[in-house]
Length: 623
Image (cartoon, rainbow, N blue to C red; front, side):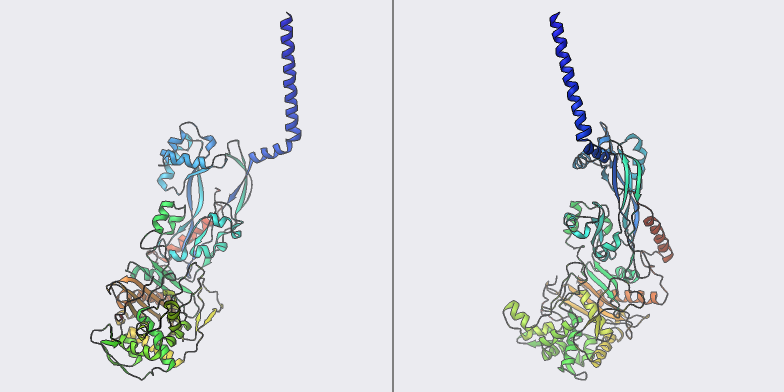
């Protein structure tokens, strides 16, 4: 009996102690830790969601959209709501491996946020997922607004692409106000004008349950769409060149020589920026970056080449301005020129006979310019080359830019520790040997000649507003009007006189001027870097251009000049109202493009869902 009473007393004491401990613990939780616990509770019940703003639209100079914003469907899963067996079935539904799904879920361990499993579902994938949503409570379909690059691989090096902020950008103060995960410009115009294009993020306050699933929206601050920008680019001019360019690699760039507006910007081969919209895998990036054709390289300003006979423009200007030769002087242009035991060839087997400098340019006589180059001297030639912008960067702001190379006696002594030889001058006078240029530099040079030789405008990617004046980049050296007029007459003859090297590319729509060039490369002369530079119309240029066909078996007159002709004719037809804006973009007429622009505007205004140049051999140039 006494044993039972003792047991009861012990039990009572235990119960009293347990009760006392519980009271103390409750008092601690409610009084001492109450404030912190309430904060934690509120944090679990309410969540602030970033709303990514639609990016601004990029238009060509005539209002043709080059990119738009489009809905993209992603599938996400709430890990806490997964049931046994769901993971394998969801993986099969999305054509993913269970290991991939598990890895993504484990990477977000401890987070209440849904985990994205697959982005950019096509229509069939979306229909399959929608039909099974009731079977998987943990599964969600999210709608996001993503970039749609209408032009695909056309002008992609210029337009660029967007991507999620990388680790380096996270440390950059420029991106302090950008929510984690929001795509930003990574290259090209998308990068250069990212701050204008990206807009202002919005916020949404939502109430969630214990699993993190949204219950209701408590409040919302809508995002502000990014600003639209209008490029100087003319997509018809761009497309005309793209369609006519048949070489594997090369570049075409066109500018307005009066304003500096960039009208076309083509580098081949190219890439489709749509591949970056939903993120590119490490394997895909490695394949793209390691492609031996270098599609990510912008050959317009990142590659440098020997200019070949297009450099004769500079040699002629230097010779005339220095007095080394007069416009009326004639020299014999034989088939070969011998100097110090070396034989330098002309591109024409039988030579050209007696020529003045104008006709030597028209017929691109190499042996004539060998002699003129020696009379002028490399230092004088280099002075005028630099004055016209060669050998220095244009400074576009798009990243790494090649500066090219204008050699002279001091340069060779500094770099090679040896003197400059007359044979070096012979090769340099026709744009070979050490001379290197970019297509962009050559477009500016020939544009300056076409507009009178007194200035070069600084280049602009954006279309100028009415009344806006171009910013000028002075040439630095006065060039007489007599010299410029002679060179312009010669460039007109290259295209429009029967003995001109580009006569086959003359146009019945507009008279244009230009200069061919074909630089032999180090493979024994079987392949060339083929050029054509010029402007149109001849008497009052509104477009200046440079075409470079890299490592082609054809000469400049065949590989490059027809590309320029197509672009110039598109420019003139559009100017005269015969070609609708954007008509050459995949053959779509301008009304259809206007409808596409309207559709893009509807999407972007709606609130999105949360969620090289080796030295050429001295074997004579080509025309």
